[in-house]
Length: 284
Image 1 (tube, one colour):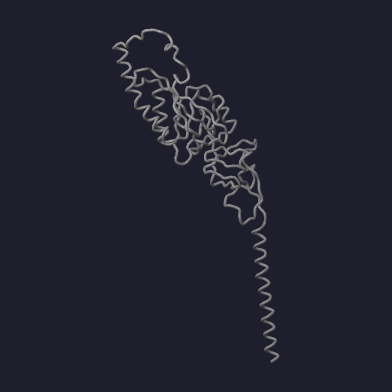
Image 2 (cartoon, one colour; image 1 turned 135 degrees about the horizontal axis):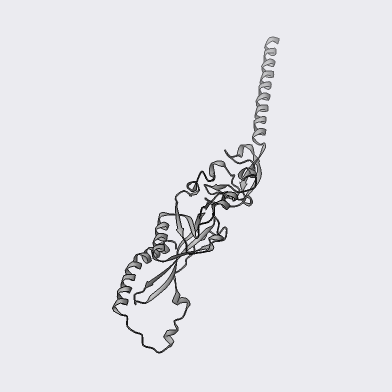
């Protein structure tokens, strides 16, 4: 009887010991998983193809179990020793999301422009009739406009401006592209009004056709403005009143040469106007 009680006591002690060891290991595991770890998170929404700047980031402590694979442990890891931004976002980061090395790309002269083209887009180099290339920087967003002269159905020459593309990412200005360091940027120089844009195939077709039929302009968007606006084409006659209508005079009839020129211009402008109107309607 005493032997049976002794064996029971031994098994009870062993059970308590193993239970204690299990709970101790479990407590250590949970303590380790709950240990705070510093990671870099976005303070705002960072769209795809954006140069990641210091004001977009902050450091935050999170439990170790919630740290994402390849997450940056410090803000300084995303910049050079001089503090220059050298990473762009390959995917969109939402506010509070951890910044991971698998979702960013470091650009330099060796990697070239192809690494900064967002998924689903192409790079299109465009020569703009503009001197503002001296103030625009890679990573900016612009709206593209086209000014076209054409003859309307009444054989009257009209000068109109169309909004043909909106919220377009500028990949490069001249030889300077997204992610280049300040030193490289200074050495690269600029190339007049040539901008390299991230566009869809449809946007590329519209811009190329408009460039061939008229002149291109652009306006720079403020940071964070991603709205697509319903903007109707505008004619010069909508701005400036034709004072000739108030003057009594005989309008000379068009000569055969003028009529032929009008006909030729109508033909050459028809496709451009149809394409631009089609794209403008698709944005509504």
